[in-house]
Length: 394
Image 1 (cartoon, rainbow, N blue to C red):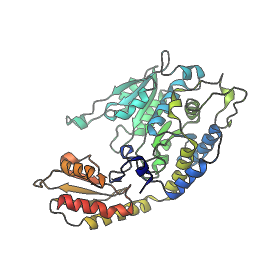
Image 2: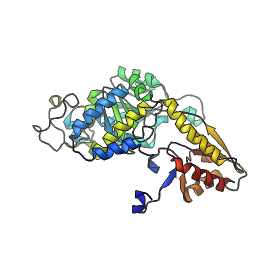
Image 3: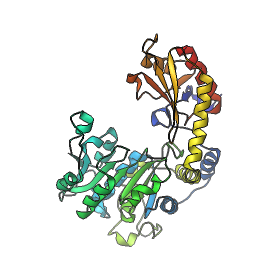
Image 4: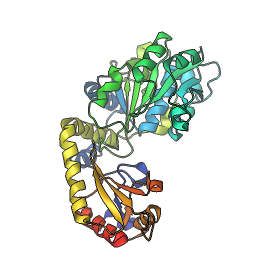
């Protein structure tokens, strides 16, 4: 029995990984304990975020940082910071960006549904480049000079979505952008592990970087990190905090929010809808420290052992082949035979609709493959998952 039974919610076996759709993974005992303890006290949220900034700065190499309500919220707040700067009047007007820098440049091949968070600020996405390498028409993609040519006085920022295939290289983008005085925001939501990526993008010159807190870091699912230049972080947090307070009473930590640099106190900002609780902030910080403390090799070994145990438990299947795929987070790939009674999609749906309900990675189901990630599997779920695979695939 679980707490979810009280509300009539069926729990699932999460073989997909730390996806928000399936509620991510599990909290380590020390993270859960920290969240519970944090909920027993009251603090000033600006003070708490300032201390979070110290921890995030230490672990990322950034000038400052904040905990956000997810990586999408970090993108929204980061964009708002690039548009409004430290001008309370501009903060108050968003998403009305008339008369402001209200364009964000993106490489066309990096467009995705998550840039809706950026457009929420009131900016227009300006696409550049033709992704021939994805269209099958050639090998080229956007190049740094095209970004430079697209920069105008209306350009508020460049949004760079980081992945292993992203082009042009971030260093090239940063060089062109900074020559024109334009900040670069990096969406690195799913770019952990390796741990080194916490510092990599800042070291390569990014002005703001957004990470998910609920994926590899294993913090509360609804958390994220925005780190980068101090002034931009200051603008972001000013557009996020509850500012229903008199100027004289308001006393944020000066090293984090220097009120003397403001001509007045902003109203509730566009990021007020991205409220983050004290419990989530503390839980994320504890999880972040634990994530950094564990080496990539140890994490890879830990998940690899779960995947190999699952592979042994599944054994040989009549209608599929099970392959161990190594990587920073190892996983299993179940390739369903072309002559099997049910194709991969039907098998995956049977897993989902069965008892227990098992959610797998469907990203390559059209190629006849079902992905199984060990990242969010409980030890007692391994044999249950294996038994279901044997039942469905002989």
